[in-house]
Amino acid sequence: MQIRLATLDDAEIISTLNMDVQRIHAEALPHLFKPPSKETFPSLLIREWLANPNIYIYIGHLDGQAIGYIYAEARYQPETSWRYELDSVYIHHISLKPEYQAKGYGGKLIEAVKGLANEKGISLIALDVWSFNTRAKTFFQKQGFVNYKEQMWLELAK
Image (cartoon, rainbow, N blue to C red; front, side, top):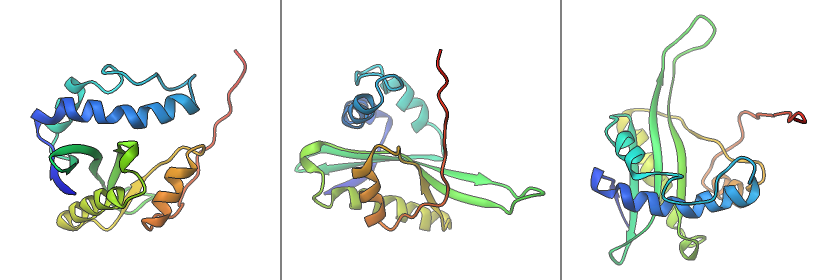
């Protein structure tokens, strides 16, 4: 798989590739996530993000076809009175077409983000994963990620 940084011209491709990961979330939490469409991750929004110098989207190609992407952000949090400086690369999304999953391609996209972190002198890569998504959690654990924080919610009846 060849991996490259996305350009503004790739916004439509990324929008389409997002539909697979959007579908997983919409099926699991339909009251929260909308069904996948061009409007759930519109190319105009992707173009805006790509114009941000702290956002990096890598696209994976196989035999000339885009098969997945990873969307990451370099975050710089200064020291405060209660916490030390914390720079990180945060992974917002990773998506691979289903037929290319569990074949090592997701790991290659993670490697691209590790390279970005090294290039920026950042030693922490973070992400979050929904509790229902055991497949994603297993994948991230195999990539070396460990739990460091948990979030909880309480839904009240309307």
